[in-house]
Length: 147
Picture 1 (tube, helix red, strand yellow):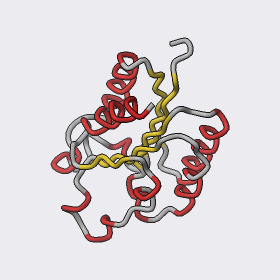
Picture 2 (tube, helix red, strand yellow):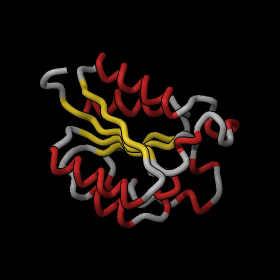
Picture 3 (cartoon, helix red, strand yellow):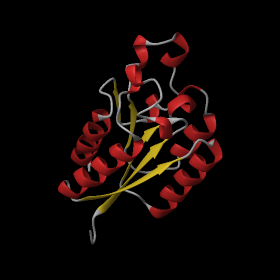
Picture 4 (spheres, helix red, strand yellow):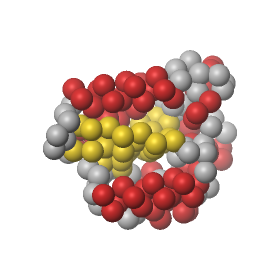
């Protein structure tokens, strides 16, 4: 899509195991299913959606820095386990001058207490949690409205 605003979707550790990892918590959709739907929805919203996954904190930080330098229009991020531990990812997100939407497949507040603390939520424009894979699409719709 020529001249379409770019939205970067970042998936954190273990999300490449969606579909097989704890389907009772995370559902049966694979990461590829989610990414495919996001790109399709992006086209309908006139947004260019790029997706990125890594199990490695430094790779996620590098990709956020690249996005900041490229001037992406928005970022959707599911930091996964790094949500609760990574000051490095938080600091990288602070480099962005665009809206950030934090996504979680499960309702983190119905889970273990350590999952209730996010290093991202207070710098995000919005947080989407508990809607399963559909939460990514809802986040993209919300972000499109912000843009």
